[in-house]
Length: 275
Ligand code: LIP
Image 1 (spheres, rainbow, N blue to C red):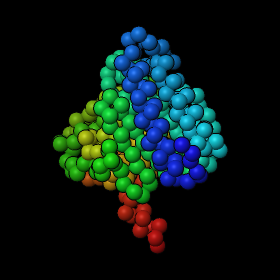
Image 2 (image 1 turned 60 degrees about the vertical axis):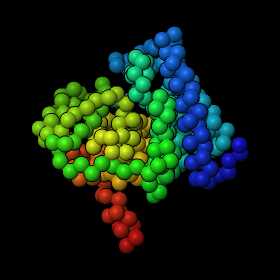
Image 3 (image 1 turned 180 degrees about the vertical axis):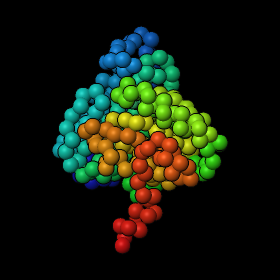
């Protein structure tokens, strides 16, 4: 298929490539026992499928949009005005240990504004997709963030990595528990953001995430009516940053508890833009 230079074509490419990379990842998952895994560092897993999935996505994007830049977890890349941010497998530790909670995460960003977000869990065949300003879907059906308005009914996922001292992570967890939230950790930050977008979770917090793990999911949550942090102000595509995404009614409470700012709600932003 030939693509021309506009967002419709990039959206089509994004859907096609995340599904084909998903098929490749699922095959790798089913053969994982034979292939095994290696470690990039402490608690940092790598499988052959991470590299194969990223190479597949990189090649398809380069063939369709040779002038777009590409920034991926495994091979790095460049960040120019138009950039694709790609995690070829998020939740690699789950993937490597036979737990079917992992996904592919692809975002397309222009001038530091996220335009497309896609997250695909091939084990459940669930594709989350959004375009800025057009709402979010799961397998084509509109999704919304949860309406949860009490912490004693809320489940908030807290992501962990070795990039942040344990004391800060434990402090954030303590504060969320003190508010009455159930705190979960499921090992895929991108999947966790998709679950905030579709209301399966009430919030997601991680004190530092890389852009390939969070840019697609943050756009999904915003498009699904949730609240998110201003990632491009408090972090960057190159260096990542703190992440918060939440059901709207408990977002201020989570923000207070963990000390991560919230962007203005979407309605307010739209009004300010129009003024
Ligand atoms: C990891 C996420 C994990 C998150 C880490 C890390 P990987 O990505 O899945 O949930 O807490 O920050 O980014 O290594 O599986 O692609």
